[in-house]
Length: 159
Image 1: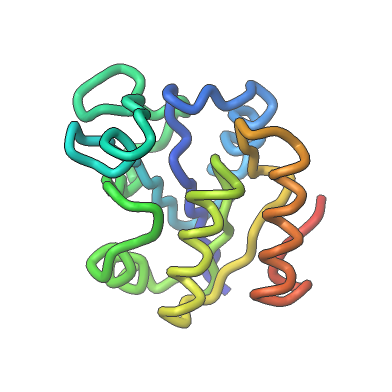
Image 2: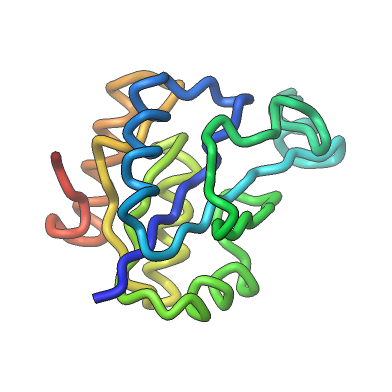
């Protein structure tokens, strides 16, 4: 079974804790395929115009990845919560049997990417101990509970 690691938005803009960075770095070594999403904000995005959030703007240090990825890693830039059709096609081209999902924000981008994978019938699991949200533990655990309900208890993996 070919395993892939799908790392969601591990960027400086989201201030991922060091334990998360170290844990994901450890998973990268064992993964047969690695894909990392990179969320890029734009001046006209709803995050700016509706929410006033100006972090992770294109071509800023905050938008850069906060982890070291091997050269074999495919970086997927995105400007939405979930994955676009071309992003899903790229994942399917990797010939991975199941993707392990990790990264930040559990209650937003991680969950949105999980819904994208589910809708496209791409097999995945969520590595709960390698997800995190800046909104705090309560939001993190609520998001994990929602994903267990939506995708099945066997999809959210506990350490």
